[in-house]
Image (cartoon, rainbow, N blue to C red; front, side, top):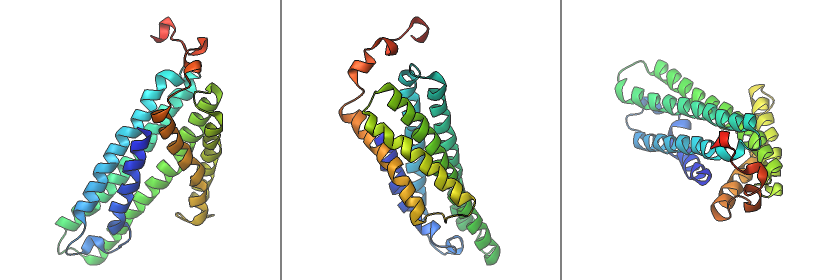
Length: 223
C-alpha cells in the first residue's frame, strides 16, 4: 500500500498539469478534461492506499504505543481529507469549463484561479504538512522504538518529518515559495523514508524476532 501511494500520487500530478499551469483553462474551447478526471481517479486510489497503510499497521503499532498508533491513523485520515478537497476543486473547475460557456471570461478566469489556488493549499497542508507529523514523526518514532524495521531507515522519518513540517510552515508564513528548491530539498528524506519502508515491508517484512517477543504478543484484550 505504501508503494501504491507512489504509483498514484506522482502520475496524478502530471495529469493535472494542463489545469495547474494554464490560468485560462476554464475558458478554453477544449481541454484535457479526461486527463484531469484520470488524475482524480488515481488520487481516489491514493486515498484508499493512504488509509490502508495506517489501518493495517495499527494492530501491530498499538502494541508499541496505542496513542501514537491512533495518531498515525488520524493523521492519514486528515491528509486524505485535504487530498479529497483538492480533487473536488479541480473537478469543479472542469465542470465549470464544460457548462459555463458564454459566461463572463474575466469572472470565470478568476474562479478558475481560485480553485487552482485551493488545490495548491490542500497539497501544502495535507501532503506538505500533515504527512510530516503522521508518517514522519509518529510512524518514524514507532518504527525506531520497536525495531520492527532497521532503525537507520526509521531515522529518515524522524529527520524528514520535521523538515516537511518546517517547510510547510515556511511556505504558509511566506518565508519561502511553494514549490521552491528549498521545499523540494526538505521533502527528500520523507520521500525516501516512505519509499524504503514500502520496499522493505514488501521484500523483507517486519523483524520476526521483534514480532515474536513478549511485548508484541497479543494479549486477551487485544485479540
